[in-house]
Image 1 (tube, protein in one colour):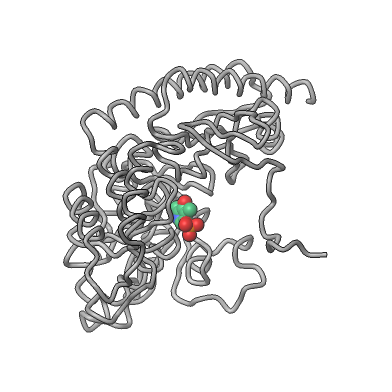
Image 2 (cartoon, rainbow, N blue to C red):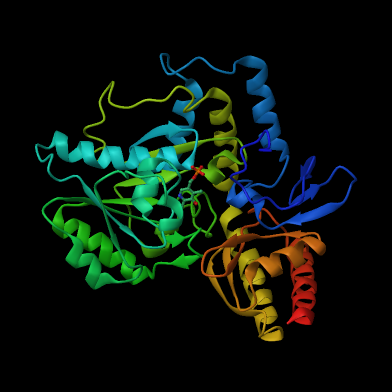
Length: 392
Ligand SMILES: *Cc1c(COP(=O)(O)O)cnc(C)c1O
């Protein structure tokens, strides 16, 4: 008999009732070290006092009014995002996939508004993940996302990851935009080389295309910069964010330059819940923390330590691990043994990690994790590797 919750997730046999920083606790009080942070969502760990205070304060004042009215929290959060990024304007959503959808709609509308409605195709990369709406599974294109859900949305051209020649060849007079994740997350923590990002920005400029970045996973400090594209010294025209910006409260956004947003006039797009007062109160608190003095310096110092420790584990367990990749606190451990076995052995060591494509384990801890907690995670990952070695 089908379970009351639709069985679309292959869930681990674990359940948590409370959290505190990078720790999660089960009903019986067992504590797990959370190096997945809800898939890069709990950017400041569990139950951060400033986020709790922001949410509680807002919950006592006002929950929802709808976008029929001005929402002061939206303005406050948009101002923070505009101040700290390339963007001039922000549309708020509740999730990642709504943010990439908004980005694609904005790009199409831009060309329609400019009198070139035939320019409506978007180039995307194999191995990408942009969310689960019909539009965004069509954008990513992988069979494991799309099978059985056709007909898909027209207008996406897929090119192999890292193939700059194929990318150039895919640009036609119908192309509106190129969309990519600076570091592919679900695809296995695969970073675009900085030189490729710079070349893609130049290609967009030469061909009058919009560059859409999906920074839903890479954004909000995850890679050691506020946004991952800053490492390459480029800026997008449109950017989708979500995950970390809400710190665990559902919140996403589509950021854009004034130029790229030209077609998005009143009535063209909307959402009931997007930019809800409680979401924005938490979002402001997250932004204030992540942009505070020295925060990202600490992320970079701590991530260097984690990286070094992981390189050590790869050297110690060459039959289990292959290499370390990624940026900042968005780290992939490419495995030789099946990644699921190592993740399960991690559960036995009370350590939580996240699988990704290409037989990778993702480490996406809270951005405010300490060196001591990193050392504890390395110790537990070592235990997991030893346990897996014994089965090989
Ligand atoms: C998680 C993710 C999404 C989808 O976000 P949802 O909130 O699940 O809709 C899209 N793109 C990337 C890069 C992601 O990591």
